[in-house]
Image 1 (tube, rainbow, N blue to C red):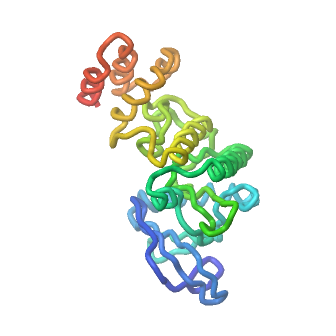
Image 2 (cartoon, rainbow, N blue to C red):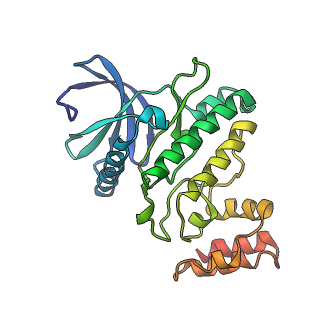
Length: 268
């Protein structure tokens, strides 16, 4: 049963992640289809789910339709598992792009999508929230058959108040995270704008801009295409084992990039 004592029946499996699964369910009282995020019962996942609920409570200040964010409809417990109720949306942007054979979307679609995502981030900023995991898989197309296309931002599992961000917090997804996040440096809402820029490229080209399965792979491409972060930014990093990695990054302008990144990999 959900937080309103309504019973939900599971109809289909929609996806999974490190947190657990997402299922399409039917509210037996209203006969409305909903998306239920079923978190694992592992203690760290339960704690993360509670933090997500805290963020979602803050977002109740916003009109989800006007803010282009998913509508949340409470939570319920299934034993030790925390289950979150959301409106059911059509398809994630990653799949929407794949359905176009990775050829990229026409500018007539790219523009409206980016305006809506900018609007979503603006609304999050108005209540002091950093999403921290903006990527095409966390953007949903409301209805792929409607025009103009409408999108909503989902998955606030890594979101946090901007005032509570701690340098060294590792958030986001490889290939979309801002350099300051990967390097354990202080970050804020601007890191979401970096991720939005990468989504913009993906929309236009059909493929992610930065390949790689590890931070050092992605940093290599970032530095080769945009140069290294300023020294004063790098020097604001944590006083721990990442300092060696940062010092190696700072030397890239004087030394072969590939060699240094191999050294950095060994240092981590």
